[in-house]
Image (cartoon, rainbow over all chains, first blue to last red; front, side):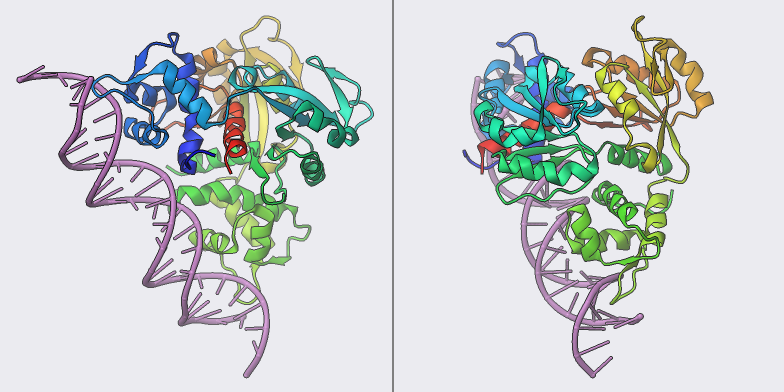
Length: 206
Length: 206
DNA sequence: TAGATTGTTAATCGATTAACAATC
DNA sequence: TAGATTGTTAATCGATTAACAATC
C-alpha cells in the first residue's frame, strides 16, 4: 500500500530481483547495464523502473546489490514466506509441488488438494493430498495466501470459487479457461498451449 | 508472412481460438460480446483484433464460429501439427510430456532429451528419453519446430545453444534465466515464481 | 578534471477506449 | 422499420525511448 507502481514495471521487478539474487556479493555494485543484460531488458528501462521505487543509485557508480534486493522485495510484498496451496494433484500439480524454484523466491507449498479418491491421501514432496472439501476449513489456519489451479478446465471455476470461499485472494490458474472471481481477488493465468501458439505465429511470420 | 498483426493482438488470438474451440457447433454464430466473455477481454478489443485479421463478421449478427476458427488458426500458423522437443526429463519436463492440453491445440511432443544417465532411456508417455548429444542429429529428421527448456537454470544457455544448432527457431524457456540466441530465433520465457511474485505485489497493495 | 552513470523531462510510439457510422 | 452488432476513425491513455542535465 505504498505508492503505486505501473503494471509493466511490476512485471519486470521479479526479473531484476532474480538477477540480483544471482550476484554473489551483497555488497557488490551493479550498473543499470548489468541489470539489463541479466534480465533481458534495456538499461534505460531498468533505470526508469527503479526510479519508480525510489532506488537510490549513485551516479557514475551504480546500484548497491543488497539494498536494491531489499527494496524490490519489499515493493513486491515479499517480506515473509507466502504459503501456497495447489489444487489438482495430477502431473502438473505434482511437478509444481516438487518445483525447487519457489522456495528460494519467497513461497512455500503448504497444502495440496484433489477430489479423486486415488489421489487424496497420497504424499507429494512431504505434503499429504487432502480432499478439496477440506480447503475452506484448513486454508485460514495455514495462512494460505496464494492458490494454484492445476486441474482440468472443467473444474477450474469450481476450484476458484472454493479458493475464494477459503479467503484466498490471489490465484494462479493453469487451466486454459477464464475463471470469474469477485472484485478484490486477483487471477493470473498461465496457458502453456497459448505460449506455444504465440511461438507458432513467429515461426510462420518473420 | 501475411500482413503483420500487432503483438498485443497476437497474444490474445490463442484465447479467442480456445473459446471458439469450446463452442459445440461449427456453424454457430457468436457475437464479439460472447467471445469477450469467454476470453476475459472487452468486446471492443475483440472486434479491433478481429478486424486486423480481416474477419468478416456480419453486422447485427456476429461471427461464424467455423470460419473464424480457421482464420485465427491460419494467422497463428497452426496449419499442421507442430512437433515439439522437451529438454529436461525432471518433474516439469515429465509433466509437460504428459500434458493433455498440447495435442488438441496443434502440438505434439515428439522427443525428450536429458543428460542424466538415470533419465536417458526412460520412457515417458511413450517417448524414450534420449541423450542431449543426439538432439542436433535427430531434430531435423523429426521436424522439431519448437524446443522447450525444462532444465535447471545453469543448463539453460547450453540447451538453447544446442536447440539453435539443431535448427530449432522457437524456444519456450521455463528456466528462470535469460538465454541469448541469434537473430531469427524467438524465445519466450515462462517463469513460475515470477507469476507468484506479481500476485504477491497485488496482495500487498490494493 | 574526465569518465561513467543515474535520473528526469520531453518526445514518440503503440495500445486501448470512445464515439459513431454502416448495415444486416 | 427497429434492434443488434460490426467496423472504422478519432481521442485518450500508458509505456517506451530519446535527450540531456546532474553528479559521483
